[in-house]
Length: 313
Image (cartoon, rainbow, N blue to C red):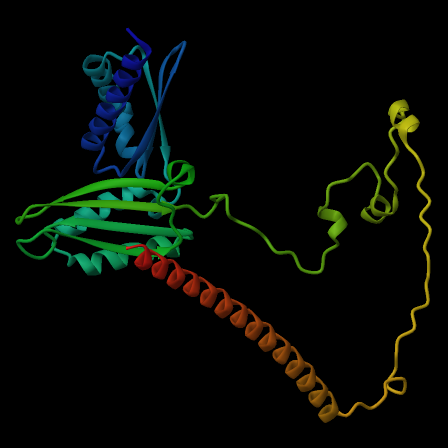
């Protein structure tokens, strides 16, 4: 058989054994089990609120359970160890069965839920949650939750720290599912922290080879002894001497600047502009005169040629 198939078979067998104990030991306050296979056989540890009812008079009940395990589940030499639950109100399996029985006896679901979760918190739990799902009051199904304290819902703490239990209440309107989650008082959560008052920090700081923080800060880093200088870089490196030349620049002050009449400057600019405009106008007139003379000469030449042609005719 493959390893994956073997894991599935072991899990299925464990679930079937747990359901068997829940049916047989319901009145004794069944609180869960642990199964471990050893070279001597199969070791089963039962947790119960009333161990005397599990064992029975003269061990009659426990022998009956052992024989049933051998015949039904093919376990080799099962060895059952019964342990008493010290605090039943902190066992999620027992609390779920109690709440289911209370609902079957006619308790109102809200009163039963608040009473149960209050008893859990009074026992010292860090957090608890109760979920009732089904037809709790009417023909329509719904979910009711009761929360107290701190509870984890996912991650590794939810699997290893949180104690979960499931119960069932068979009512006239239908079946009500009961799910209980409890964080025990001694649980070490990964996000827990403690605050100490009036203590020395050195007592809680790890030893750094006898050196304090001040000594580490004052010390200078050691230079690498194995590092060799780069000869090529030394050959090519040149020192550049930078000479700073300071020159004195005479900056004119207000006293050195003479007062200038703005009106005189404007008149001078206007005169220069007038001279330039007159010069450009004269050039344009000369060009126009020269162009008129050329056009007149050409027209007189044309008239002479026409008169000569008429005289020949």
